[in-house]
Image 1: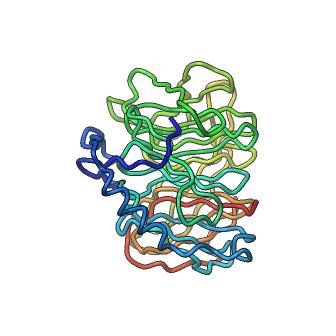
Image 2: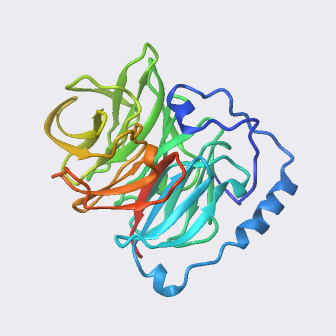
Length: 325
């Protein structure tokens, strides 16, 4: 449900790598965190707001679970203009990121069963979405309705109508957790997950529907890769080699999807499994986790990077482009 900004601490924080291997039960909410929230609120207010000129630009958000930071860059230039320490909110680091057509940015938190909403270029959250039934990992906003979709490691897919209120929660027997989700151009929601018996799962919630439907996709797939609607097809993370990552474009006929094209992103050696990518027009933005770079490639052409942003450190996870309202 949508609540005022109140803090609920977690007994432990599951990092994204642990989430992808099934760390769900470690997160337990606890009460009596008022003092911690007041302290966190004071620290949040210390973040300098962006000036009007910067807020008028498109912005690139990148989350780093290692230092709890969400870095904000101008897009596509890549100038760092703000750093948000989201652990100051009293929760764990931000994992998945997504944005709506008004430029609002949603951050799924690694603890606290929460999603925080920031206005474009904002220095502190304007809303908190919370449900004890969810451990949010990935998110997506339907550009037409404003509905917010959530993929949860508790084995649920949730939809907040108009991005607020109490979520409608959906599940399917046999699927133990979900990682990412995306709306297509007609308001249908796709989510990928992991079967209880191990293996990749993909489901669809039809617009206006009341239940999830499992889909079949060609190819040998592992759970945990990201997906996004590219405007025509479902872009689904495929395989990773030592120096490359592939993204398949999927076309559906009923409940069966087939690969109609593959984009190969050439990457630096020792790049670990990417957590999330973001497609903006004809550019794909992808954190290179092991090297702490954010790379830019032509989409769907792929190939070598057109440019990169060096952040340093490690464990880059979420990424989204927030368009100026």
